[in-house]
Image (tube, rainbow, N blue to C red):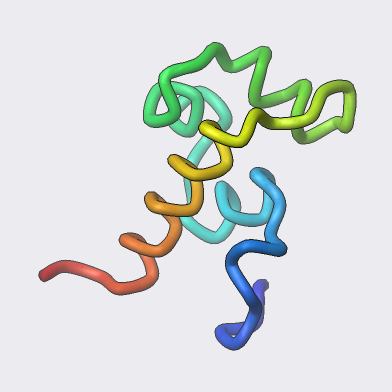
Length: 68
């Protein structure tokens, strides 16, 4: 489990995805990419693009804030 005081900018795609309880397929759909791309980022075969990280961070922060 991720500590609540963790700086979101230092989290990996996998850490954010797991805390939000998303499958790789669901995460990929929200990020507008393929499941394989998410797998590749999580395995370290590729680095997430800056835009992918921005979207992931926005989703993660919204998740942590909860419903409006």
